[in-house]
Image (cartoon, rainbow over all chains, first blue to last red; front, side, top):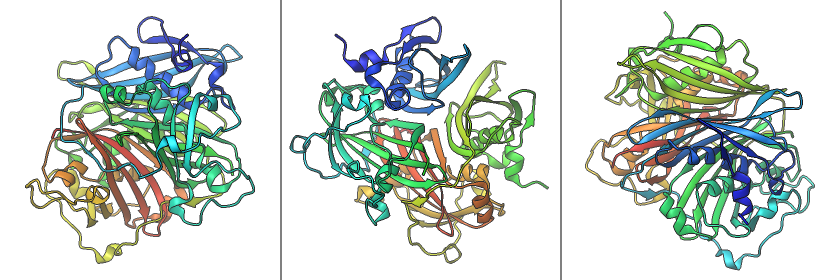
Length: 277
Length: 277
């Protein structure tokens, strides 16, 4: 049987730039599916497109509304193809209760044929306890959490929700670090890396120890690895680190990095999240 | 006479979701105009749209190709309007030499009616010398540089291009801080803040002290201020801080923050940049 991740992001070509998919119950979140799996599905439309050139470099996904548990259409248009780069506009639509076609998600992506260059990592992996020595943590709650093995190092989700501050130091108050991988393990690729970029619980929950309503509205992933490097990472753990920068009138941002166990910075990612607090 | 910034981002309604604009010689870059002014123009289409609800929260702009010095059309579609948030897809097109309509820029934006909430700044402004005590720096080169007053603090553009490393410490090697404002001064708004989010010279130039070919391919801005706060900032200086995280096979990323002189974190911004090195 196919891995639950591959089942969830599966798309059937529907002619031209269109693909058909459906939400998967194994990835259910509070309202609709886990945002990371929807982002991975949007990227998958680009990856499966017969005109796609090169590998993903940048992806931005906007969550316009919670998906309903029903089929959806993803349209991925290659709007500009240059010599070595290609720009994409993606739109996921779903028919609502009244029979109206509604946009539930938009995305833009840039793919490129990468060439050899001078390379550097200006964000070295923090020195932390190796994954194997960190106990796995079972987060209770929504279904999709069971799809990941998480081994948290710092900035764990509060076990008391009494409004206690996580820290007095603003720079570390919203910081979390954890080891993560698919459960069961699955070789890393662009789609699964995209989903894991959205794994962090909302920074406002850590910062306030209060479980307020939240929802990611926009997420960007910059990929710093090619398919060969992702394949080399295989089923190994990734180290993820996330922190907030600003909380202001109902929206906060999150900036995050994901490294391979070998210390390769695979992607950097940012998101802005609605909160009611 | 209108400020050169307002001249450059000016759009004329062309019916429905369409607006017409043109490049402005005062904002010329190496190829086409300064990316920041094109990003501001894309946002301006959303801001001027009669159906726009609320203020900008997130903006992603993808630079698909250099604009030619000619008129262009910007289409800004409100693809989903919720109770307090609205999602936009923007596309800038231009007719090329062969008479073909080509996409030169895509963007997505999210606007929202912000509500009062618990607020926090987890990225306090660094303690630096006040703007008035820092000498202004005249960067030679392309035209658009004259549109800004820049007072650099650290991570200045190299004055020797001999491949010397900026620093041995990866964490500070690609770091720049500077005070900036429009020249001549102009009251801050969402459009001008967007443009200033793209003001930093390419991190690869700092890191390598080699002036290699570069071009921003995607940029995201998260706004953490409302129109009232921007108006309060007025014509004051902004402190900008930028650094790279990864340079890999032809693309590096940049993460940056812009504060008001009073220490308000007005926006956080990220971009991925093509480089040949």
